[in-house]
Length: 427
Ligand code: ATP
Ligand code: MG
Image (cartoon, rainbow, N blue to C red):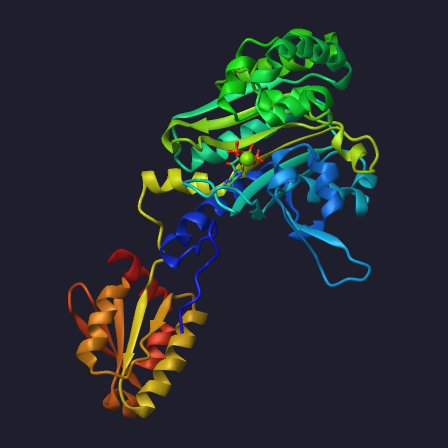
């Protein structure tokens, strides 16, 4: 029978690379924890409507990329594997009245996301994001805090050659005048726009600025800029964000073409890109979404956040360093029925005492077990044969020097501090 392959666009994260993932998560958890962010774990599937309202039906994600199906409920009910994290977090914020505590909620999440896309390097159908959301503050310091956290995480992981682009998309009341100017500019090019963009010209012209179509992008290059249509308040918020970025020492460049085409996105929009990623250059993208909580039925709540693509982050980490691996202290080899049972017990006791211990299960000749001990990365080997089983002893063999020492097992378990020191100093 043929073997079953994983679906296109999905990948197994194998033990040899899982160290990178753990490293990224550990650093992020530490940095976010120190800034008073709390982890939240919403479900991986939700009612389809949440994403239609929370991301927008006119977007590629909702229009073309969602894994949507009816589950077994009657009457039929449409559910969707989450394509991103913000909508679920905001739903949880509203449903659990997290706003009732007053003040600011600082949340982060990580996990798999699902989009039916064209798989290529840095682009998968099941991929992983780590994201933060700050709910309940319109202070520009919140915008800069989240940006600073993203750069801290990336820098602490050792990444370089990163670029931060920022822009402001203003407030909803800034947009009617801009929308008109944009439509006036685009109308003469109508026939040259891609089909989707033609469609959006009346319904949601701002989304055309997001288009990935090259012909459309050329036309859009010379279009009027939203940044020139910002009202006083929006200008002030954006100026504040820039000043604060400078104050905390974060380099950025203004990119007036960076937009989010939906009404609940407000003010700051930003992206962090790397030159070392090829076509899929954006590692982290985010911004303010002051209108989203209300859009999803909650109280008016300003908010700002970002999502970071972990596969892309991992591609960068892999270019930098060998995979971090776990460190083995001891390798236990044994032969003969009594010795094998006692070896199991000894391994267990040493693990309880804090050692990392691998137990050889093969029952093969000692020579073969020693070879595996060498490959395991352990510093020392514990040997139990028939003689040791009989006398309740164990042979401690240092793998580098070959030195050996016969010990009673009671004595070994009484000298764990000394053993720890010896192991650490001979690594
Ligand atoms: P892109 O322009 O690369 O398609 P996007 O605008 O769709 O990105 P967001 O929805 O803002 O991306 O998601 C935030 C981050 O998640 C991206 O910057 C990227 O690092 C990562 N990401 C998005 N889609 C994928 C995917 N299909 N595979 C891997 N990572 C992804
Ligand atoms: Mg995309």
